[in-house]
Length: 344
Image (cartoon, rainbow, N blue to C red; front, side, top):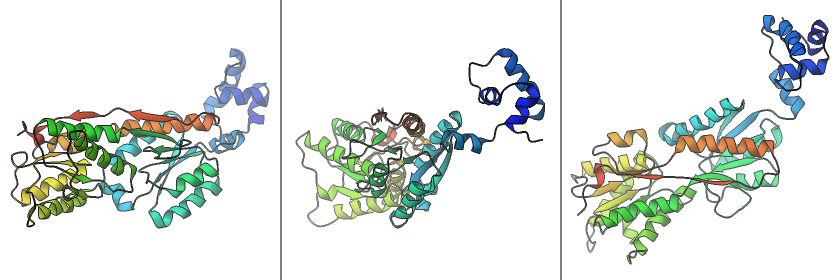
């Protein structure tokens, strides 16, 4: 049976506003009035219309999650499911729903228009941000609350949640150097993605801090996925075999665990032992990192927590529009396993 608030108020002998306060669990309602309203609504399992409540409050209680990558990446990179789980968990706790948009570069402008003109969402989380993402500028200009997963490189108005990709990469490369490895290569992430850019810069500055000049022949670029790591490692091996080359790297920092699994596969195919001939480190500490052969030394980042914190930060910006931009850096941890060996 469907009842309007006026009908509940008449049957309970209270005002319509009292019914509204009881159903929305607001304070300042007498115990007797609350009992009378619940005596009418509970037997009917009555719940207020969520859409009507949202419209009355001027909010949809929906947020958008924009992942500017190809659809295939979402289902092959375990980073995104973990991030989405964290966001969804926070949404469930705070009574929000999340709408997922996937966009490559060509589709992104259409997505921006839907977000800014549809009125379907109260705010947006932008994940896997690019160095120069046009969506960010449009969201700023249209004053739509949003949070970026990944720091923004230039605009101080952007709220974001990230880890310190630069210093954590610098730390893990420094660890390899302290173990005695000297020809340290990297399989970097895409240069146009903020995380890829920062981890590459951390690698380079770790070498410079020890008086070493980064060698372009020891830098290959992947796409954060397994096949990209496989191809990039093949490139490094091919360069090492060229006339005049200085030989194989003795260690490689790979900017994601997914790429590291591809790199390990390429090394096995080439008959190169890990860590006997070459040490390998990854980044992320995905659940499978402890089960690779050998188990992977890596940088643990709190992906699930990053999603939850991004959502909670967005809720705060929605509820308090005058809140200053939030810039939250979550901690990482170097996890040492067998793929780096005892050093040389």
